[in-house]
Image 1 (cartoon, rainbow, N blue to C red):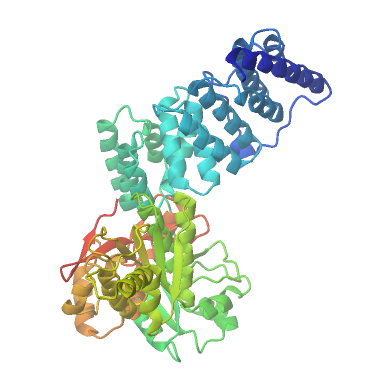
Image 2: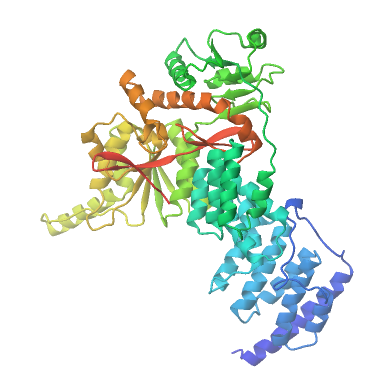
Length: 616
């Protein structure tokens, strides 16, 4: 049996030997090992890791001549000092040696932060994240240090979790009395690049000062392209928030010079106006004309993408004095268009080529369904769901949506959702039943009945580890599966919420069918969901003129409508990343790759009606 006295005696011997060995080894090694990326260089926090007066070597010498209890804090300080001296490997070595001897959670927290700091400097992000998680376990009162939040911001950004990174940055900003103007402006630039749904997620986290930041961003979203109006709102904001850190940002925004935009007189629109995809091209054309509304200052030149030789377009553009191009719509035509040599004419592409890069003057409007899966996964993973399952049709589009959802969920919540693929056949319901473990329950019931040799009153039970379902299916398949899921959930079990992509929603479902979908929540563009963002007069007119138009063509009409309105706004969106377009396809923002991405709304079937909901 090892007593506490003998433990500390042995520890003292081990530590002394380790310290002396380390001191001898240090003499033969270089002063520092630095592999940090330039963008990750950070200062060491004064209260937890800084040692300005005593060197790391001196701390080690002092630790070698005192008791174990006295040596532990000295070794922690030695590790912190090596970190301050940028000797990251040495700092980690000392931290690892002392870790097993730490006597309280405060010391464990401090050494975990030091380890995380070193690992960040060495670009070992995943290991650094593990140490941050350890620090969280040791910190019972949840009052973290400034350095914790600074490191968390770096780590989560590197892991692609921008919302968590910005939350940490805002908390660090509120604690740091030495914040510089440049640091505040950097934070602003990162906030301004958030999609609207990402900002909403950040607000839910209740980050310090977030309401003030949100108000400025909302002004920028809506009025950033109207500078005089924007500045009036900023002045009002300053009067109400004189002590907010964003006042530095406001002062710089007010000094932004007025953007001078070249006048647009002639717009070429390239669409498939003949051939197999004529219906899609014609509907996009109708959407553009609806937005155009006989504007006397602009002339539209429609070009049939299926008939034109793309190589002749430069001369056609020159002949017609084209200032701007909308289209092409189909991916194959986009590919051909991007291969035109020296084509620097400003262009809003209505699709994305995966093969040919865009020119700097080109912008693409993305309608990728994978983007809405990312929005859904990020939003729903914050709702305390721990065991999601994805039911998806087994086709290319559905597979991409399902995989994007699962990947984003794993990255955000560190939980890997199960994906169950099914085909459009009679076995679809059988597979669903099996996935919910209802089949296994029925087998157990049958086995009991055989043993008892009589029928008994029973009820099948579904598996209890699931708490959320994400459905990726067509409207027809959804109308079959949703009621079937409901009837296979045991009356003894909690109701499992079901969410879906816009793929499951159709405006052509009648009232009786909508009742079967009660409780289903889904993402959708404003054009197909009644809300304050929907252009209701145009929607009513469109329904009157084309009552039988399919859902997919409705979406193309909305894209055409938005594309025309975007032409005059894109220069401002390029100049200032906080400017948004509140369109019929969603709230659009321009990212660093010149791709317009969307924030979608949430809808829900409730008592046979579809209504917009707020998904925090």
